[in-house]
Image (cartoon, rainbow, N blue to C red; front, side, top):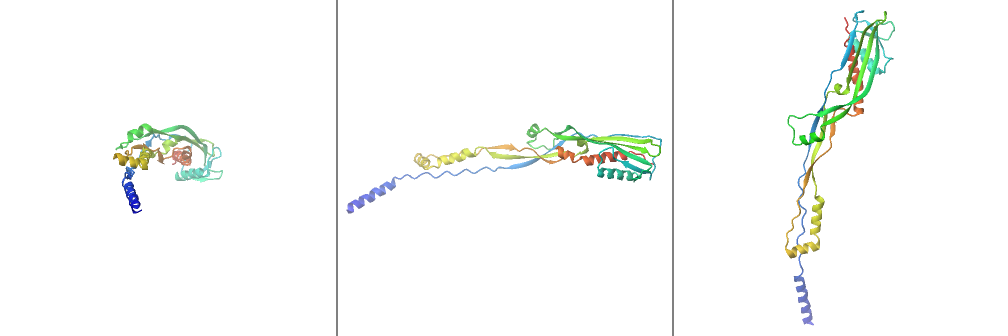
Length: 269
């Protein structure tokens, strides 16, 4: 009996001695540092001065402190614009009145707005372009923005005689009115392209069977290195009106500007 127990002990010990130890599990390789950077682009367009035509006839001399009644029923004039025109007349030292016995009548004939061909903004080359500028310039060489033409015309009539003593018209497009450039930004970002491949490799070589085989063959396995590519994001607008909604928001200021330009052309003695 003692002999059998001793025999089983040696068989057990011998069996343990031949059990193979698997190789150490492979560790995931350290990912590279993925840096990102933001750049800005500036787009510019040609600007034109407002077109202005002003004619003042010599039949009557317009003098300081004479009264003027503003008539706005022939055009779509907002209360704000009417108030701004009145203020411009006051600045010319003419008195605005609402009575019918004024010296002159200023009639607003036209306050028009219409969308015209889009304005083209071209990419401006910076003084010190970054390494990506050429690539971005090929992808985004220009921007197309909505464009509105604003027109204002008015006439000053001598009330007693009915003589027209002054008439004028002005126009400007929104691209010329808003002279600031468009500013866009984009991101340069690095991304790993083979992460799934690396994970699959590690998983494959960390199974129990693969680890035993590596231990048996004494193979050293090297995981594949991470591969990266640089990607550029789409452009994001930071500054400047471009959409129809953004351009339309400029129209009250455009109308005020054109009206002020015209009233300033009236020669007052």
